[in-house]
Amino acid sequence: MPRPAGLLALLFAVGLPACGETEDASATAPTSEGSSSDTSGGTIGTGDPDPTTTDGQVTETGGSEGATEGSTTAPTTGDETTSTTGTTSTTSPVTSTDGTTTTTSTTTDTTGEDTTGTTGEPSDSDCLLAGFADPDNALKLDYDQFGPVIGSHCKGTNHQDITDIERVVFLGDSVTVGTPPALGDDYYRSKLADVLVDRFGLTPPNPLWKQVNPIDGVALVKESGDFVSCSKWGARTDDFLPPGNQVNDCFPPDMFDKRTLVITTMGGNDIAAIAKDGANGTPLDEVKANAAEAADLLRQTAHWFVDDPAKFPNGVFLVFANAYEFTDGTADLMACPAAGLGGFDKPWANPADLIDVMVGFNEQFMSVAVETGTDMIFMLETFCGHGFKAGDPSAPCYRGPGQQNWFDLTCIHPTGQGHSVIADLFTAVIDE
Image 1 (cartoon, rainbow, N blue to C red):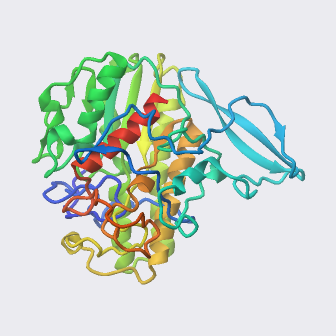
Image 2: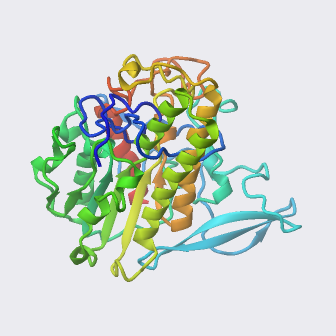
């Protein structure tokens, strides 16, 4: 469904299209059409340690290296344990479509009141604060309310045991398709495809599959080897299921018997449109409602994959990214020099409201991962501190002097190094 192009669906864009994108050419380019995504509440999240780089590129370690020191994973025994503070922790099984079971934890006090994430005890998600100059003042999302299992690498969740993949499908927006000036081989889907060929013995895609068609905003070749891409510049969460067509296009019934891994970045264009609407005077309650609606479309898509075990009899796995933003937690929409080209020529009356919307949106992404037993990478937290306010010591995501900017001249798309970071996040979650 065509949408007006917008240089950057600015900010808060996990998958925004950018300069030169057609059809809402900015995966993040905000537009007045469509729903915006975000749920209310929370605080903006932040960071896992910067990935190791070599010659300016992030080294893909298969996800096993770079684990945050001191991080732990949630219990997986399903046993009930009682702490000395009078609280009881239990684990809840989450079963994927291939029969694999993982667990999530919930803490309850002796009166039976749910106190998940409120006991004051160390949490697995605390690892997300590592790397910030002032962790005490860093913004933190309340993921603990959902009881996720955080991977030992602190790069995403660990709800699935992803094995024996036969087919890989990429859905989503321009972050997944890839955009100039980054080169095709530098796009995260291209880098990740190379890793997955090695991991699972898959037939590699041809070089054309790794390139983008700048006219249509899609991969130059849709399907090659064991890899498919139905992602598109400007896509929003309503492009997953009808009336959108990404899922229908990439999952014909005769492919359901393939043990499938689904990878996606989506939601940046929704949140970009919301950010623009709010700056232009849309009431905050309406902005939050639009964000909640967009997040719910991701939820519906995840349920489409996992609810009916007979649909994918040999198993299906879903790994998605949360939504990043380029202001390093400041909500300064004009921090990027080119922001005005995308229609972001005025600030929010209260930037804290925009942060709340963005945080709530990402918290709902985590709720989807826990509810459906799928996985989410921490793209927001990892990129926070590598945006256009990276050098501002007062920014919540400040990591110290000399940090690299991982957003390109469009404001919302990753640089080649940024794509390497995203590929590393997905790799870590898939490997563990």
